Structure formats: structure tokens, C-alpha cells
Image (cartoon, rainbow, N blue to C red; front, side, top):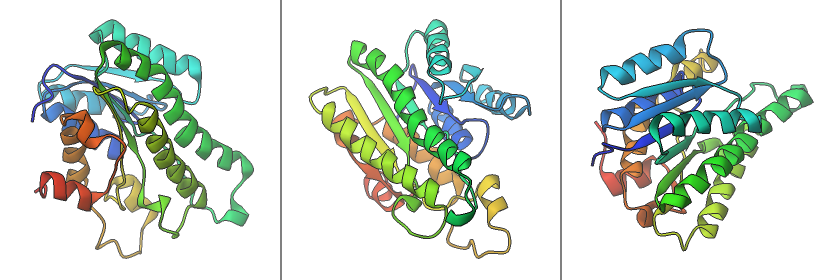
Length: 245
């Protein structure tokens, strides 16, 4: 499996899962467009440097995926540099640790806007370019919290929405043989962000980041008709690709 010659756009790529996914794509030869709302802490630049160390070209962009003009700008600059986008990973997301009664409405709206509207907008802008060349894969990022009633009601609601969006869009694109609309559903992943929330709690069953560094690239390199319209958790990915070491 190789992504040599392909271009992947990953949102929310400066750290955590987005960074892991970007590095996994680069390991398989893809060039990367990485974007994030936060650019002034140097982390997006660090991610770009690690990608380039793997031999891939990269374009780092700041932008807010809840703003249509920002999304258009990101995609325009990506196309200007690379001429195409083969893979879109809708990874950017926000959450809150507040219980429902303590969750401010403003934060609720932000969670919905980033996690749902951002996924919609990025897909809306990128998909026509994929359809024009009759080839492309959109990978949406869900979470076990889409179904597990454990914490973060706002986050869980949006991730359930992301899965429904994936299934609906895949159904609309079902006659486009070169297009895949698919979704990954990580459990709890041992990233710095997640572990910061879980201080003092049992994290022994949490998934290692390497899993989600490897598998999205494997999906991106697969036959679109084999992966489209599916929600991939760790077990499903292991069944298709084998275990990642």
C-alpha cells in the first residue's frame, strides 16, 4: 500500500490524533496539507517539520473550519500548490468537560459548529474537486462517545451526527465508483490532550496512537468501493488489515 503521488488534507493537524494521521499519510508517501485554527504556538510548524523529515512535501495553513471563507481559502491554496486533493480527513474537533447543567450554551454551539459544521463545510468544498477527477476519499473522525454514554454529551452528540453524515453522504455518492466516504471510530486514544483530561483515572484500556497513525492511511489506499459507507472501529480495521504493531 502506497500513497505516493497523492495529496491529503488533514484538519486539526497540529497535535493529537490529527498529527498522528498526518504522519501516517506521510509515511506512505502522501504530500500533506495540514491546517489548524491555532498557529501561533509552533505546533503546526513542528508537525510540518516531522512530515518533511519523512520525505513528503507539506503546506501548513491557519484557518477556522466553521467559516466558509476560511475553508475556501484553505482548499484554494491547497489546489494552487498541489493541483488536487485526493484525501480529506475531517479530524478537527473540540469538546468540554462540563456536565450538562454546567455547560454554557456558547460552548455547546462551538462544539456543534466545529465538529459538525466543520465536517460539512470541508466536505462541501472539497468533494466537487474529487468528483471532477472521479477519485477521492473523505475520512471523517468519530469517537466511541457517539454510542457510549460516558461523558461529554455535546461531543457525543456531534460524533453521532458525524457518523450519520458519513452514511448519508456515502449513500448519495453510491454511484460514484471512485469516491469513498468513510469514517473511523477511535476508542480513547493516549494523546497528550486526552491524557490531560484523564489524570487520576484508569487508562489501561486506552488505544495507542500508532493504531490511528497507520489505519487511516490504509483506508486512503484502499479500493473506494470496499470502504465507503462504513464506520471503522479498531476491531473492524484489524479484521480488514490485520493488527498494527
